[in-house]
Length: 154
Image 1 (spheres, rainbow, N blue to C red):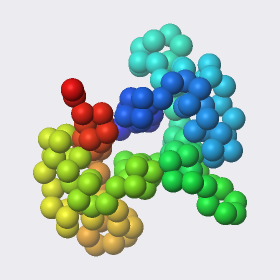
Image 2 (tube, rainbow, N blue to C red):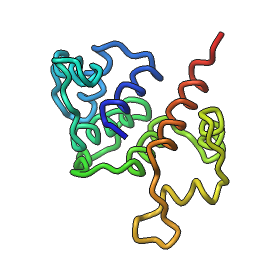
Image 3 (tube, helix red, strand yellow):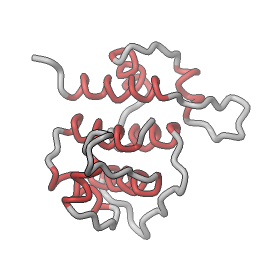
């Protein structure tokens, strides 16, 4: 999935403004100007659109975990240089404090039905024989479902 789309989905789920999004980055000790954040949140094709790299998204998601769950003692974890859908999914699950049943419900709301066994395969180490890559459609369904859970239509 495109990193900028994940960032935009998180902003929409949490209904954060630009200042709050910049503050999330600061939670992971990353200085981001409001202008850069605004350009990350632009639509692809906009002349000011700025591509969000894997380490930048990883740092943002680490900051999101810190902002929503509290910062752990000690040094901030180093951001991944390459961030897969599986890793982003795991970080989002941790940040939003979702258990397996919550994730399955979110996926169902997003139009994807999985068993607990299928879900757990996304969170295993890549060298595990039961590991399964998380495709873009599954991650998009999860984000859409979390948006529905947190901001139900009135």
